[in-house]
Length: 77
Image 1 (tube, one colour):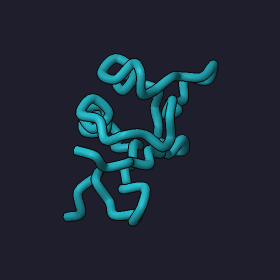
Image 2 (tube, helix red, strand yellow):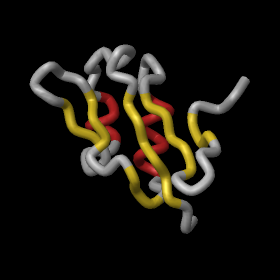
Image 3 (spheres, one colour):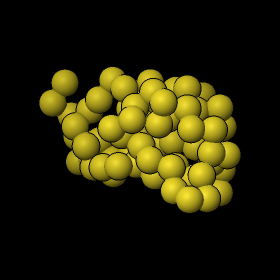
Image 4 (cartoon, one colour):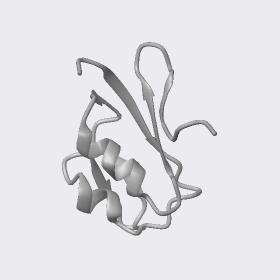
């Protein structure tokens, strides 16, 4: 792909399901309050990180292109 992504987790929305960690263990960690954090907020485009964002039950994960800020996920309605 070659794209660089910026990954954010909205911790006011995150419910700590851990699905992101299960899907992309290299991409996310849960803290002691079971809140998700991206392991590398700026990362190469990664299918597992995208899968984790798509699988988040509360859509707390946002992915944008690091250079332009264009939204990768969630898709705009």
